[in-house]
Image 1 (cartoon, rainbow, N blue to C red):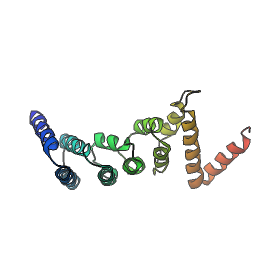
Image 2 (image 1 turned 90 degrees about the vertical axis):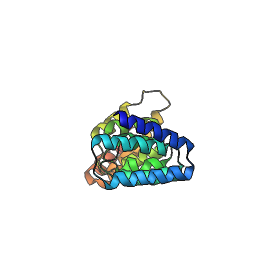
Image 3 (image 1 turned 120 degrees about the vertical axis):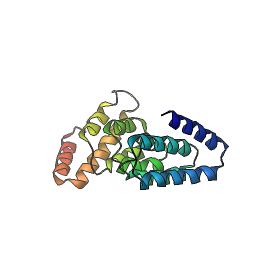
Image 4 (image 1 turned 180 degrees about the vertical axis):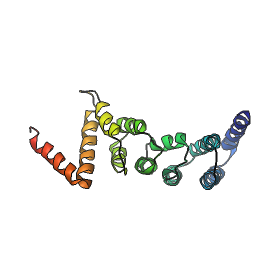
Length: 182
């Protein structure tokens, strides 16, 4: 671990002294190495630290490209997946929110509670959505807070997702809407 810390200190110095172009080259080289190889959890963690430090220094378009590469990579470092999922830019966060299996339900709930509607829409497009995400997303808001509108949007998006893909869910969703008082 001491060797890793020394390596990361050296990397920090190189990132600070390097140009934007050299940092981008280093990011893509590191990402390609990680994706094409077989590594231990400690080595994946080190890749995550390197990629994270390099990703902090690149523009939105490059972070979006990184997110697309890592979204479907099952061994992607969790710290990078979380960082990309919580990016303010939906171009960066979207691929992770829609496709990454490394993103745990608690992170999805936190994202719903803190990010914009476009992030919520990306979450509703996941192949599978854990029940705890939908249950806790509604519970994350306190009545009377300014965030209640976000909860309503989340429920509306989720209802649309259910009704579009599940005929039984569509009937339940529409029957609930029909019985609501105006």
